[in-house]
Image 1: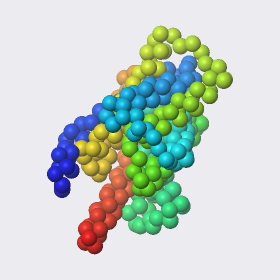
Image 2: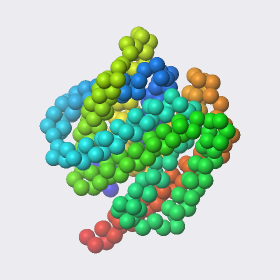
Image 3: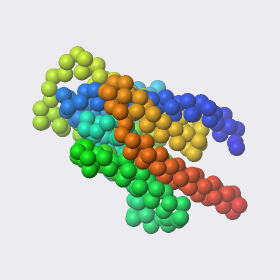
Image 4: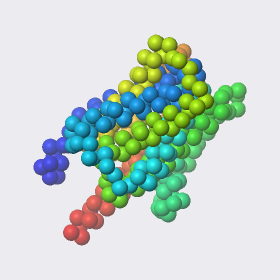
Length: 306
């Protein structure tokens, strides 16, 4: 490990920052659920986008200057940002339709959708590990959402939740392509994503926005603050620890979702969630472990050929 890498390798700090990121994003979800359908999703997304754009521009100005926001990859940013924006619209809408824990469990299917995208568009080979993970995750999803679909649950909310996971996987797919083809700065990528959400959210004003109460303005503002804080903390966490070390901490979000759902909204998770969610989580961890092994093997091969 080089001196520079060693100076930035602090796995405990990275894990702490990642946990804070997860807590912020979980808190954002709870605020959205509290607002419910009283405030249109687009209005909340617009305010969140404005806060994010301002904060990111200030950080860029103080850290490296506004020139860091210049890019030659506007098309790539547009595609990635639109996919992420669609995911956010589905995400915030789903939170008003299904329990927090159920939505969180469904959101963990994103790595499986990402694997499917890699198979279809990149022709990446899928070995036994990934097939096992996909099968395990599929069974876990069926168990988790079964009661919602078959026993009078909100099947529409389940579909919107899956939409959030699928668009999230699509955004990650394009993000991986962008990172591999030139390495755009994380602040630049996040800035264009936030700007896109702001513009798309503003368009929904044509359908009419209500005037929020002071309390609703507070929670709308908290959505923006928690959202940009979660993004920045997550980006910072990967500077101090490897992805394989801290990425599994995303699954702590389920604990926050259960706690927030029970304490603030009186939601008691169905028994199926406790059986299905661990299978979905295990599938995600298998995919993550396999990705890490592939990265290690590629690095070893490159070192051997050097």
